Image (cartoon, rainbow, N blue to C red; front, side, top):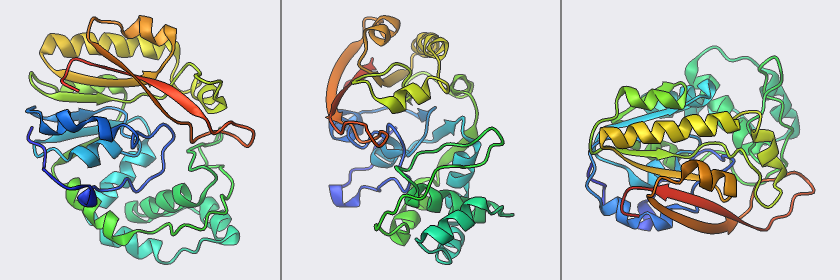
Length: 276
């Protein structure tokens, strides 16, 4: 997998806000950009900041359990201009927000536009649905423009050589081969710095899921693949994922939380058998 050599100005920004996004990590991936890997795999795609930064020239297999998210990436890959055309009909107002939030759209491009719009104009960009599967995050009163046409077109080009799939993270084994690179950024289970949003994620990604993820890494190593795992800096996580590989601890700003959450520093682990 050869990585496209690009300047910071050419970096494609994630077009989605995503809790736990890894924009903070990319400045530490310069060795990965220069590395020689075969294909690229990402099992918890989210905002795709790592993929957009690396832009591997080999084939990329990108997946996530969130079907609406994957459909949005597929729509951008297939016809970003059509998604943009629908986004241009939306307004960043409280009235429009709740109208669009409660609306049902028929085509993938329209649903993708809705997904991007709600993500960019909602409170904190949190993805949350009720028991009926309906998005229920309140309006965010953001003033930032929710539509970046040029960036969406760039994202379409970057997604050209990808296979996008909705599914469990263990599905990465379907395509991974020796010499491939696998990036794993699961929802964090345990809280670090008492972050309330992490407690919400315990329902999404359990401790048992973390143990399954550890077993997946064992299988990836048996295949001869490289992996990079990010996770909360917590003793339980350290115990589960200690495989004798490289381990780093990074501090970053804590940007996601409720009304009373502290916007402070939080620590995250990175485990890898690659040259970070």
